[in-house]
Length: 127
Length: 396
Picture 1 (cartoon, rainbow over the protein chains, first blue to last red):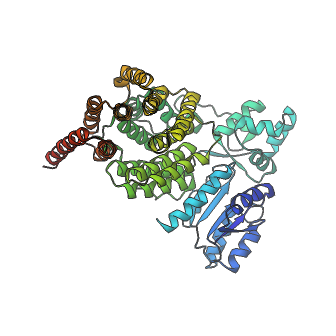
Picture 2 (cartoon, helix red, strand yellow):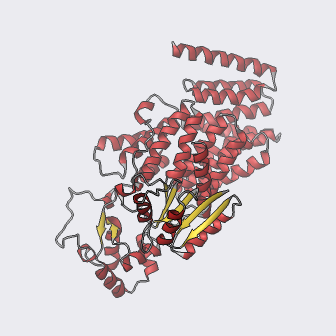
Picture 3 (cartoon, chains in turn orange, purple):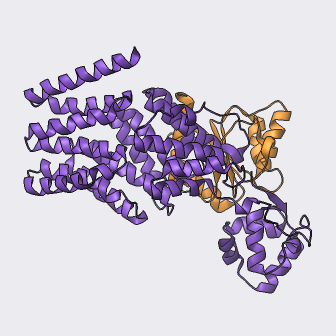
């Protein structure tokens, strides 16, 4: 069983991701409604998750802020992170070394999301 | 990297209100989601691409300087400047190659222009064009000029797609040199990293070939089917082209064991090629049609198709010639015409000469045919011998 955290403030988008991922019985999907809640979950147990979907634009802490704060506090996430964004942003060196494996630009299809997760887990098992 | 410019949110709101255009329509017109547009209006996102700002100023009929404090009112673009909005998109370079089939010329045009800013991410897309040229022409003599080391140095996510392109080129080089597992590993990375739909679809296609050439039929089939699942409603012609190739590959894989499914895949591939007006679409499908007819003992119709293919065979890129010739050989076998089959098998050997992975493909392909007929078995053994001798000479 793989545990996936979805941190996304837009309810419709979050539900869409949850619905796609929950179709696979091997995935346990946990949701966080904003950066603060996502941070709290990750800070409490950084090793709990196998994969994180993290929205870039969120009120309060954005996705990168969440990862940076955890890193500063010595709780750097060990699992891969998929950043979700509305457009290709220019954040350059800010995203170095944060375990970000992919960026998904909205809108994306459910199929692409499902296949991406399959590919990431496959890649981690057989790099 | 895209040029990002700060927005004047107050002025943007005023102009949107004055024009009385629906925000959703405006978002569509400038090519962003409604959500992105709302983030600009709310000030959540303060920066915008130069190209999108330009489009906004055209729609809202206002000066660029009105929409951004970073642009001076007197700023005029001179002919010497080359902004991000003027650039040719990297994918358009690929499109030009695809529709003209002049991959080398497109590639040379870029190389000789020697202007770093005319094509977006020019270098990697230039290398992609060269790789396409080599592949279509089965000419890997310039392989060293386009093959590249896997590149994961860029952690800037704007460059994830560029990184994926480099990895795809490297994977293709590995696939051609017969290093199937290493190639497959890189294609998996591309599938994860890339933003472009066509690039992801192409990586699935090549990944499936790694399995197919490694004799993992079921894995190849699963990979190609997964590749088709990703973007079923894509309107992008490059993606549709890759989907057509995924369908055709599934057709090829099903020819022996499930001809009915092969027929379905062939029809779908034909429709996809037609949808984008691909010049070789019909020519690619015809040899498969011929084989399926011959398989169903429809000798006259099958031979008619083979005749049709023969008429244009040598006007096709060499990659497609090889595909057609292998199928024509198999068609003759299905009709019990060994002499004709051997003729095509020999041509296939010649076309594949010098490229080990292609020779393996031909060898693998004809080995299955040889099982049924002693004469062909003996002749194919001779071809293998000839191939082994020429390979040995090459090594010496």
